[in-house]
Length: 121
Picture 1 (cartoon, rainbow, N blue to C red):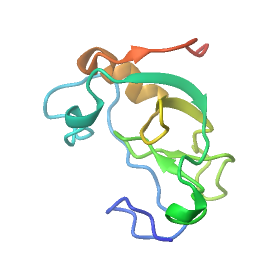
Picture 2: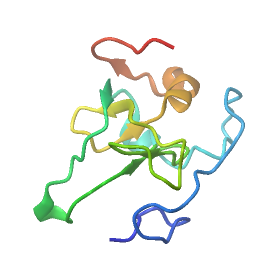
Picture 3: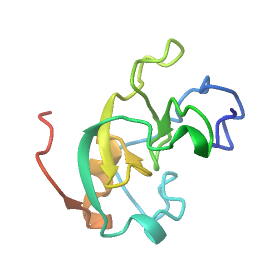
Picture 4: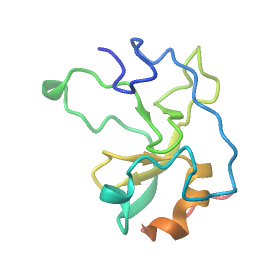
């Protein structure tokens, strides 16, 4: 299965995450690509990554990306990506994942409702 991230184009997530300057968020931030349409005001929880896609809906799904910076999420650290995230902020259904850095940068802008405990830094 090919990665759905257009910049990736490779199978099983061999792409490197894009890098940017975290902490200084403006309307022109490279990570803002229309997420306000579906992530404003949603409830998020800190969770261990799991595949939210059943096998009958696209096969074995071994990863996700941060909806903002495209960091990988998986159930193990990928050999080709030592920065793979094993936990992160997720919507209730697990269809959207947000890494720790992007959560901190965008939590006020998107007014997320945090359910449960926040992770220790």
